[in-house]
Image (cartoon, rainbow, N blue to C red; front, side):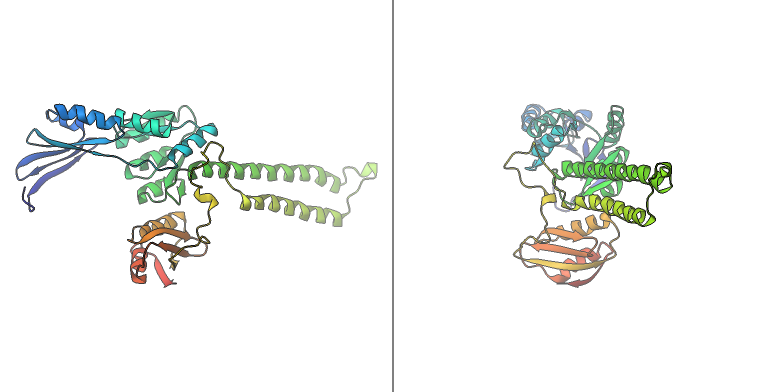
Length: 350
């Protein structure tokens, strides 16, 4: 077909693929379900596609005027820490379910690779929210996602966890935003949440016990037995109680995740690494104004990491800085423009 081919009637079919008229030829690009719906015979290609699916690849068929042109296979690379993250979640007593729009063979191959407890394959975008609602009938559900199709499910789940490098709509729909695309941060976030709740309960316990014992004594409840509490001692004790509660809460500053199921050679999780102080061959610090929340942080991070030459961006909301770690030299103006395109102001680059 000519490079300036005329395209008409372009349409995206949810859960199947794309269709259009290209120079008056009815062209299809999608999965086997789409081919069958339009009466396209996959023939021997269908069997080859099944073998590709068994290897964890998604076969995509192309047809024109009812005749199959060919098939290609695409596959997402499973991140090195994904299996370790699933194993850690299992060790924490959390059941893992993989929701995917891939066919059952491809999904089963990925399930074997990462070790998920259950896989639900062939789920259309609107079906993910329905599956989350169904799973919620068994108990509390946390959903981890990063795409546009995940947004309804993230909003429906009891806890929506978005990958920081994901789409803006997914980040807006989630309750928790992970700043790196590392699934080991999921069990780390859950452990941190549990540690925080445990700390709150400890503080409430000691505060209630202190008040239950000391207030009646200070009010003279034991005066008949000759037991009285000097007001100065009571004031000092009250201050000491506040110091104990604050000190207990500050213990969380030194918190680190403890992974029991992760293999010894698994990459260290991002929580243990302070990327701001990590040595880097080349890095530039941008001073950014206008960031108000973690969603803003995620947008700035995503914008910088999309720039050619930026290996990683570390954004600090409190310091209002973004540290760009560079693989090679990148102009200050390029970095500044990437951030300002997201409607934030860059006041300086160091």
